[in-house]
Length: 198
Image (spheres, rainbow, N blue to C red):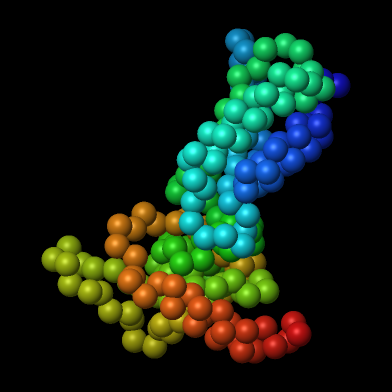
């Protein structure tokens, strides 16, 4: 079995190098074509941090990973390989709890198993629940849209009920976002689902 087939050493090496740069390994993608194999490492911030990975940190980690691969044939084998280090990008589907934790404060478009569609800001992830604040957006004239009658402004949705979720690109997040997140953490801890866990 080649080093590209068994990714154990690659993952261990990447995890060690990325940790030194404040990053985590999100995924490994290997593409084999008629030419040189391509290994793409998708990296991100640890789940307890908000925002996006700093491009300078990603570039530094990429150089360190290249040096580690060059120094040890056990990582990717002795044949030439094109190594790429990248971040997930905003169009990544949110599928894991850690993806949602990193997206706290972001505006999401998500669908649930019962067919409900939400455009909402993710304020907290507590246990396996997403604490949201619905933000319906604006119409084509720029007027704020209203939530349908009887729709909760701050729904709590189990991650297991989410069928699709993506971050929406946003140019003007709320000025009081830090306070919203802090308040939501307190509220989430007092939520009945959270009390059952403790």
